[in-house]
Length: 372
Ligand code: NAD
Image 1 (cartoon, rainbow, N blue to C red):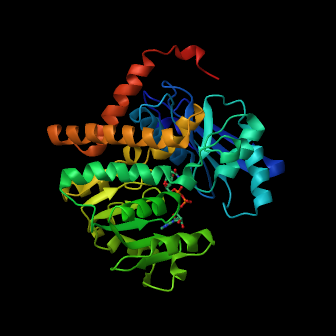
Image 2: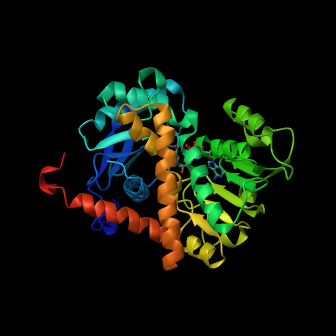
């Protein structure tokens, strides 16, 4: 049994619940971190290999992200153990079982994450009456389909590039992970004149110095195929994406993709963290020492959750995009001002901003009556 208290601190976690339903083969973990700002919103990840500690770290990232974005939500995250590519009927059974098993955790509102999507959120809403990131037909703003997180990341990149004097037109971009976040970020950056010179998925890396055909790659992925199946470009192993020289490097796949062992291989000016905790803290320090600006995950990739919070309040897609633009631009400017004034790392400035908001919210709460 993992000792979950070893990572507890003054912010949380409020609770970590292990769920086991042998008849349906369900094993899951729900981590609810800090709910001072409001009910925790965070993704349901389907994966075979995520520890309770990692679920907690992801929930903490959500507490910080939601507070930094100025949302009335705390942070949570859950993991349903399984292969996300399992047959749809089996997946529906497992997700519905998960939903009914966590129905009483009223302080947690599930959203989509790696391995789950709008349809899965529809099943959860159907079971327990709460979920965000729903299909359009039942009142949702499909955040992955519209590219809410990719859009927000580009807003953050736009503020960061001013700081380092980088023009988007002609900027070379590399994306690790060509999923909902990576492909939309690449698409929107290309619309603004940047060039995607490399991209990877779980099968490998594709490189084309003259610029990859993003539309063709999006179609390829939609057909369930790999980037390696694209007829053009150089194909290498998936780790090769780290070595491609570029101006903007976007990790949009897994946690801890960049650590002390591989950080020295990055040749870029800006790392825009699309994934959650894609760089270890040592790697972020090494990047700062090397003069590379890092957009912290919970500032740059808050677009999805801002969209989800807009949906939760009954808002429209247009309102969601406006909120993402306004909140991420404002928060990135606050972070950049702090970085320039105090010579602190962007993450330290971002954490301080989020903690100030959580602390202020905690002063308004009476904890003993908040437990669900
Ligand atoms: P996704 O499942 O749509 O896409 C993930 C992509 O990463 C796929 O192309 C997959 O092939 C690729 N991949 C997996 N392992 C890889 C590896 N080792 N190397 C290279 N590529 C690999 O997921 P997503 O929704 O785009 O999320 C990506 C990351 O961004 C996750 O960390 C997620 O938590 C985070 N995130 C997502 C959102 C959102 O709105 N979807 C919001 C905030 C953060």
